[in-house]
Length: 327
Image (cartoon, rainbow, N blue to C red; front, side, top):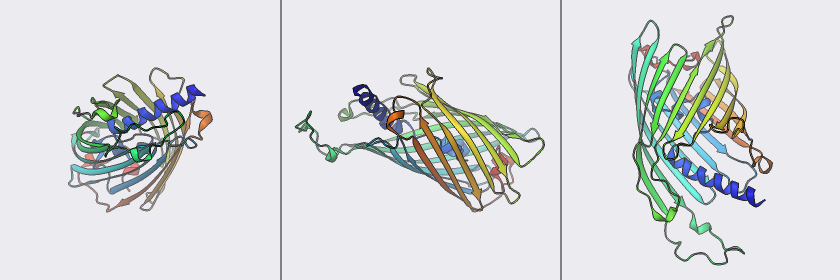
């Protein structure tokens, strides 16, 4: 039991600091919202796209991470787009909030072969706070350290940059997040100063040869932290069915693992979503496959979205890889 408690504490600490390394990435990007992964996707599509996510991790474990986030992006000209995202994360007695402002520009490399190149940049503001007012004495710790007082909070600014290449149904996104090392505060103890991490997101949208309303989308999401080289990978698959009126539904699955533990997945689970008129809805369930499996019922995420203000661009560079991007 002591080993389990230590394991939970270790994962909680990593998750708490991990949020500051980047906006939390679980499976939100698979809810037809690639902008979660990279600023280069801002403005791709014909509409103002809004996605609100609610996530509860490790249901059944007291003080487990709970996260809410919202993403919105839209095109401001034929070749450019802007976006904004914000999140609120609760993890035990830690609180984190952040907001990100993004800009992307899209270029046409070759119109006939449908090759496009996009560049994106984001400015981030993050805040981290420890709720010391919730600290209570226990049998093992009958007295709280009197030096723990005041407002234990800190904020930092940073930047992300990315590049996106698209060729017909293929896409490859390369991103560097938190380009600037940040000042640390002694009270956090384990607080990292080197926040740089790299992300690669790639996939292929495959249309059915017998039915144009059906699409298959295998994809891979890779993330590596520069400070200690630890990394993880998501292997995903989606099936999408398009309707005549532009609506669609999809089902899929995701498999996440540490890259030195391929056969010991962190999470695995199904997901599904649908677009009906201007309203979007998706649900994802991730089953924890490790020593925590017997102590929680998994991770649940709900996405609710709106697609508004449709405006078709004269440039093909703002068309997405899937037909679901344009109605």
